[in-house]
Amino acid sequence: MNINYLNSNIMKTSKLFIATLFCLTLITSCSDDDDNPIPVLEEELITNVSLTFVNDADANDVVVLANVAPDGQEGASNNIINGSFTSGATYSLTLSLLNAEDADDVEDVLNDDIIPEADEHFFVYAVNGINLTVTRDSDDIEGPNGSNLGVNTTWVAGAASTGNVQIRLVHEPESVDDSDEFGSSTGGSEDVNITFQGVEIQ
Image 1: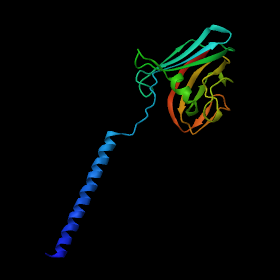
Image 2 (image 1 turned 180 degrees about the horizontal axis):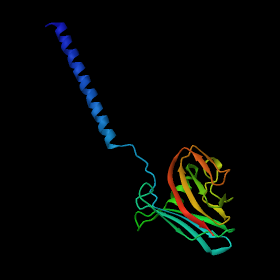
Image 3 (image 1 turned 45 degrees about the vertical axis):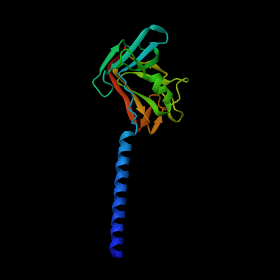
Image 4 (image 1 turned 135 degrees about the vertical axis):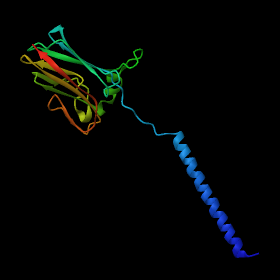
């Protein structure tokens, strides 16, 4: 028997076996990847946002700015303004952020998700045309890098005026600054960005 011929056949068989084994390994790996996909963390759905301002000297003097977005903040929404501010009055703000997609199982996104992860969130406020000022309270929740998150705030209504009030909730900002009490941030993504138009101080 030709030894060279025999060795050649053995080498060809070995190469074929190795190639087959390699292909089977690839197929198995792909199958494993499909069976165990990497989990994707989805943003929390926020359908209802409300800002309730209560006059510190008169509990009957209440201003509510509400936003309803049935499909979440990326979808269509409706703003509702109830009441007007009283010139010279001081108001405490109560925030509410809910996921009411399932009316039988409403989720409190603010208290269940945002506050427990306060180091990853920051509220930014802005006003345009209306004489409102804001202070982040001493008992506010600690946010990124020791900042005040912007959940517990006090607002003062100045001279009679009409304008816009904006609230933004920034997720994982690169930097934040609360030295201007309205707050500012860079980077990150917005979980909420709502502007209420035609808010009044009388």
